[in-house]
Amino acid sequence: MRRRRLAATKGWLMDYVTNVGKVLFDEETIAERVRELGRQLRADYGGRDLVVVGVLKGAFVFLADLIRAMDLPLTVDFAEIMSYGGGTETTEEVVLTKDVSVNIRDRDVLVVEDIVDTGLTTAFLLDHLRIREPRTLEVCALLYKPVKQRVEVPLRYVCFEVGDVFAVGYGLDYDGKYRNLPRLVTLKGVA
Ligand code: IMP
Ligand code: MG
Image (cartoon, rainbow, N blue to C red; front, top):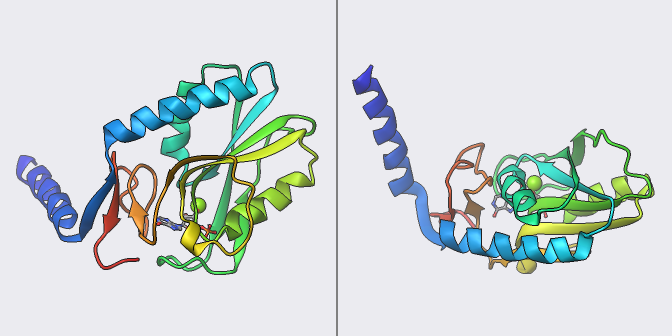
């Protein structure tokens, strides 16, 4: 039992050493920036009827930290978008696999994204939510990759801007892996 656990840990470590490139943002840097964003959001959304919509799956770690840094009354909901492909390139085929379940009409909606890359999935979700006539609709992204952007997205809040890298950790995945890494890192050989 213990040997199996050790082997599993070793496997994960080997994977890390083999595939992880450099650290983009460590735990402390992320925590500090999330606290700062939380203060800004509290100032902007105080006294409003805020609904925070996390985009699954990548945004769940960021969302969990961000809402606790905001310290104001709010409602949390989730939407899930899949863009088909599975590799590192976004394909044009974007599908909504889980819709929001709360009523957002006349409410202040803040969409929390993991990363705005081409902007296609975020733009798709915003079009979908706008039909429900929220009072306001803004986006807060953990990462923004301006070099890849193809469509304009109203991006009011950005945690960090990154260059042309493929980032994993802190909720972001490559082929379903690495979401549980507590820091944001690049992957070797993937851009
Ligand atoms: P879009 O290209 O802005 O539509 O991004 C679509 C989705 O691709 C994001 O929500 C992520 O799930 C994924 N994605 C894009 N770039 C990265 C990255 O650097 N790391 C991990 N996932 C990414
Ligand atoms: Mg996503």
